[in-house]
Image (cartoon, rainbow, N blue to C red):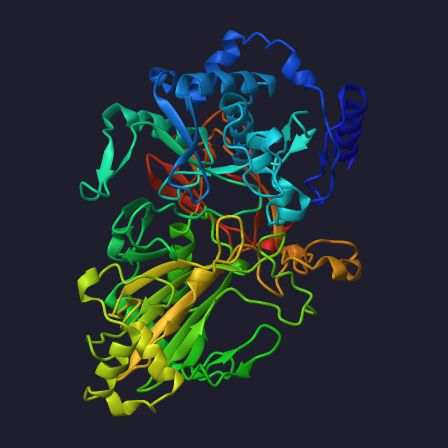
Length: 609
């Protein structure tokens, strides 16, 4: 509390003395907006001298980063394949070193401090590039104005209190930082990860894909995809057929996952090695055997305010929330989508679907609309609300060319079919009625119309162990109307499928889910639902006692995500964690110790090697 008051007082004093800025308190998400017309005191002051000791510590965190001084560093907006700005790695590293020195040269940079230093350094070297392009944005704030979209357009996520604001009077006294990802979605949370990107330039060649007319080349250099505070990473496809290799995400049969772009509008991807036929069978068998009323397969329902049977959704569905295969697939999904940790409250669980002959689901959005406006959950994801932003579809049945059961995107072009072979909806309807399965559906029904769309627009045919990803939101949180999709009627056999909906915030009913402004007084003015299970939170301290020489080069990982060095003489690593989180100690890449956090051992715990 004293530190928060001191920070607020210092910000207000800076505003009064040196031109007015804006103050953001990461503890409650509140903000005070005011204008500024003067440079920051920090920006006016000459750069402090970097001591040899600090220089040495910086080199240990960013070894050999200066070996590629002239190589380009490209910065992208989230979801945009074209860079918004460019600098040299040398200029960026020089600025990063100055900011690291100003922070007192810490021996380690934990995730949020690292992202704050990255944001501040990039802001300086980018100049006027990569400013916000939103109508509500302020171009004069530069890159900081993109990273911090302001109080009305920044969802308050579960880690909001952990964010380290960038201290600058460039329009604001404090600005929330971006987080950064590779093109493949890996979140850059540690200096070692950035160093690996730079080191990879040693053997890098321009990466070109596509034919002569559509060829796109990714320039030799480091590409960072910046995501504003409160937002989630999204892939940035540039052409149909483009491949995204995800070597950091292990899929089925221990094979790395990769994506292939099916469509740009909407953004749809085939996901290879996501799951296999054995896992597919396990999900189906478990779904059939489920007997509980809440999870067993029964007639599907829809609606945000209440669960009701929809005449235009004739499928059956159930949920698998805790089966071993379902949990593994959910965690795999989060890793593939660019999350650096699994967050249960950001997903709906794995919905298992069964379609018998003639059953279907008419075209719809996975993004939920509050038509009444009276629900307390804030679904406006373009503002501070939370909604479904991505869907991964899993197909668990093999269906032939004329068996139906495709997933159709009515606004998508069937790019996989040569233009001269495409047919109109009317022609598709005639062919259906003249086929051997034409009598399965009632003439003039919505199911028949859906089949005509399935055969004339973008559609995905099911086969066992096929997975498809599409987005329901744009990177700024606005709903993507092009993501309208439907489940085409099954004309022969039976179809099993599953979907996993992932939200940009905790979903309805969970701690951290956003609350509409008009209902916040009921929650003490809070913008989010408070954690009713706060006793699950644990403050952990990981320490190397120095007694075991086998641990002299130990490293700490959150599951498989590197967290920090835990070797002999390294400072303790302090984290906020929760019951059930797994922390691994590795030596030479092998796990030598694992802790599963248990809240019943106390809110403050020490873990020692």
